[in-house]
Length: 583
Image (cartoon, rainbow, N blue to C red):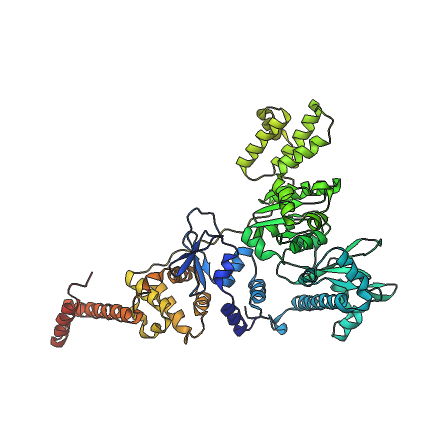
């Protein structure tokens, strides 16, 4: 945390509304008094027990005990480091995050420089596309593909001229030869440093945090290769990035759905027509890392690849990997054999939804029909056996036993084969052929925290301090009887003068274990204090507690025979004051 200035962290906390952040993941999030309530994203539950406090910018789940602020919410949900969560939240807040580079190790400093260089390159190529006379053919190419000016801007599309000019511009900005090569922007050829991309339209590739990690290039004519991605670099691995995911991430999170397409132009056309959940792998088959990335933000994925043989086979392989990762996967084909890009521009989004997405099929049904279509009709016993074995291998990838059972029943009806025969065949499958695609490891379950032991009076006092932290100056350590109460009181008092709206989040940073759990819980429980004067209630509580404490001291002396006459008078006076109130 020390890598980011404290005032920058405070600025992020002030500008990011935790209610808006949580609403991207928890839907619906409904008003409950001063708070918001929804189903917890960290564990399965039927009755909502996840509470968000907009006033204190904190959350707490009464089911699993997880609580915290915007930073901890994002860290737990997306399994991010503090730095990664800070980067994402800073982006939402419109804050330029500039960690002190001197605090980084050599590897981190290098990665930071490469990120800056790639961001510069993306902007440089984009400006060339918009303004350079050499980019006339590139502009006409995008116009021919029916892309709007808004799409060019949203995806920061660019152009790399044949003559090259990035190397000189980057070196003038202070970047060196080694950094250009490591970023995948240049390569040494025939003893000279040459640009990696030339005479191509360019597609900046962003990770899920919005950082440019690479570029994709496409020829505008018959050049080869037709598509060219950045080489593998410290920042870029094509098997771990999905094009367009960042640009539509808010919508994917809210709907918990994604649409997987095959190429850059398919994704851009989909976004341009309003289907912003579209994303695509980068010229490679879907990988387990891709599936794990999607699983962070979506529970359902529709795969829409080209209708040719290669596209259909890639869709099936990708669907099996998604299935093994625990995603609900369906496969759709575009009517008339067109690409999604062509169909959307020709027929519009409503036809695409009606004739493509709404006719999608689960992986078992789709694979069954695809394999049957390749066999001579009617199916011979051997063909039925071949189809059954292939589809059963896919069904076995499904982690849900009920879905597996339903799919097996349907397969039996389609092939005219008894279900028990299929089940026996599935059991006979060799172990090495089962679970072909290993599912990514699920995130660890939320840490179960022990609840702090509070007396009723301590709980009341701490609740008042969380409602009005300046009251902590009235409290003394001896007013509290529990270690948790003392720890929270000290932490609250230490945050003086409590002028920032984010003091509640900073309080949770100061606590750990049972004390943090207790403070998180009480922050969203104090709704019943809205119609009382916290100061007056605290004065009454402290007065009674201090009177009781003094009375116990006098009682001890009375029993020991050491109570003086004036002490006896005080003892009777205190008894009178507490009459009818002692428990």
